[in-house]
Amino acid sequence: MQRKRPVGKIPNQPIDQLKEELQPGETARQGAKTLTSYRVAALPILDHFIQRLRLDDFLCDHLPSEDRRSRVPTATALVLLLKNLLISREPLYGLGEWASRYVPGLLGLSPDLLTALNDDRVGRSLDRLFDADIRSLTLAVVAHAVREFKVELSELHNDSTTVTFHGDYESAEQERSLRGRIRLAVTHGHNKDHRPDLKQLLYILTIANDGAVPVQFRVESGNTTDDRSHQDTWKLLCELSGRRDFLYVADCKLATAENMAYIHQHGGRFLTVLPRTRGEDAAFRMRVREGRVQWNPIHEKYEEGQHVDTYSIQQPEAATTEGYRLIWYRSARKAQLDAEIRYKRLENAAKALSDLKAKLASPRTRYRDRAKVAQAVETILREAHAESMLEVTIQEQTIENFRQEQRGRPTPKTRYVKSETTRFDLTWKLEYDLLVREAFCDGIFPLTTNDPHLSALELLLAYKQQPLIEKRFAQLKTDFVVAPVFLKEVSRIQALLCLYFFVLLVESLLERELRQAMERKGLASIPLYPEGRSCRRPSARRVIDLFEPIQCHELVIEEKREAFTTDLTKLQSKILRLLGIPKAYAN
Image (cartoon, rainbow, N blue to C red):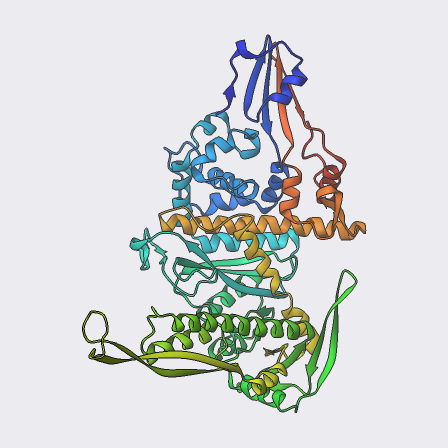
């Protein structure tokens, strides 16, 4: 709701000065003059991409039939929530107040619809999105986005993360059917936020190597393991791309005999890292420790003109037990990091053992049993991943104590009673020979693929694009604060996570279009950072923040209406030209 200032409290001052004091969404009157101020921010830019995606049309096509009692159309409420997530991520109960500060037309709202907007209306819109066929909806939107923005789908990267929840969610610990759809289970599983005490859902995402554009997402119950998701994901990607020969890149959870055989037998290509649990890994590392492996440099990596890494390869190539190509690489940078990690683990283990040693020496120690001491040592070594690096010896000592049989001042006839107490002590030493042998294996990692044509360097460069998907997960949890989700009904959470996928899609397309335009214009960077510092790869968040101060003011003088917008800076105008929307902020 826009707030009106009492006429009697407005001083007799120029309208320009009055405009500067207005807050967005407020109206001020001065005699026959009325001034209303709204925020514009980056909404015209977001509208440009949302319209190119035809998101409203696809929502209307896939949502259930509209209830005639609904004052705010479901598609309008969902797109408004999408814009809110992109700009400021207000809670649902504050959505109406947030929307009142912006130009209603840019949110697809009329003044009547604005008054009807509340958290209940948005919640029921999420219910209707859950009732829709989300798989078909996202498939249609992404297929159109691929055609509209000419996104290349020859290389696709898949990974997953967890959306962590605070709360019991006792009624949602089991999957069940709700209005013909599967309501997932919010439950415990392998938590990738390192919070095993909290319940979760599994969020699976696939991006294209071209601009890290999201092309597929799925939400699974919190106890679902990654290795069970790849076959369904690959089939969906085949349906989306209309082809099977794209390179499917994923982490070691893909490297099961069943997953690799399924993709290979159906004409697909995969690239993944071989897990440490495989026998081929143990055999190769034994050869490395024995000094029977020669490494040949294959690639030098530079960032901003600085040398950061050297990659080497072991030749000739090997093969997995299933017959797929197995290529071993060694990274100089990874070798340094592995050594640092091993040193940190030893340091942590030594500190924990020292603390335990002090507790054993305390007269009030609770460690009176050897088995309990051994269990504590085992736990320390396991948590520090130092079981094979430290040899710990538990020393047992019996201490004799004597006390008077009876109370009183001792005399030559006083009798004493002997008691024995068992105390424990710890000593440990490094397994130097083992540490030296392990150092030979620092920096090595194996990639396996069924592609017979890509070179070892091409496979390495393809796999090194996998961190792009981690960037999207980081944005999901920082820029858009996806977790924790303050909703009780799991069906609404599932629908909200679908909107978050569209948020990532809009964000990635904005970044891709801007970076491609910079490349076409020969611009190495633009001054997006504070103090005008250069930015080589501008992010959507930087662009959205840059346009946050833009406002629109509407002045009415004796029924004559005039609108004017905040003047754009040179940088803002430049970005609009690069994005191909120069008239977005025209009065």
